[in-house]
Amino acid sequence: MFRFVATAAMALSMAFSVSVATAAEQSPDFTLASNKGDNLRLAEQRGTVIMLNFWASWCGPCRQEMPLLEELNERYAAAGFQVWGVNVDADRADAEQMLAKIPVDFPVLFDGAGEVSKLYGVDAMPSSVFIDRDGKVRHVHRGYRDGDMASYKKIIKELIRE
Image (cartoon, rainbow, N blue to C red; front, side, top):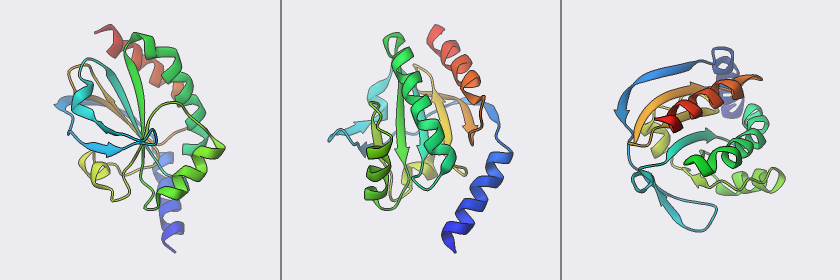
């Protein structure tokens, strides 16, 4: 039943996918374990544009978006940009199974308890939070549909140029 409700909520949120410019608020700091074997702390990334992408293994649009995020990470890394995937599955093994099928080079962090998701008010899968070089949240995008990559590229270019 939970999976059905979660899937229905995700589908509804996708129908209302929006990119929202936010008042530049300082991004909440956190430290999470990564699939690279180390812990990553957001505050240590000042000077880099970060895209936090919250996703779950059960989310179809997340699976569709993942290879595209890999392309963004590769394309803009030299300009000071990084994608950080933040997996919200309660069981890390679910995320690792998906990553075995859809491998990515960017770090994937594990938020099984949902604490970081709560800090960022994540209410849709996937959700992306764009953080500028000063550590301020500049844009939030909920859901994913074909064509959203153009919006992502525009936001990334704007933040890199600042």
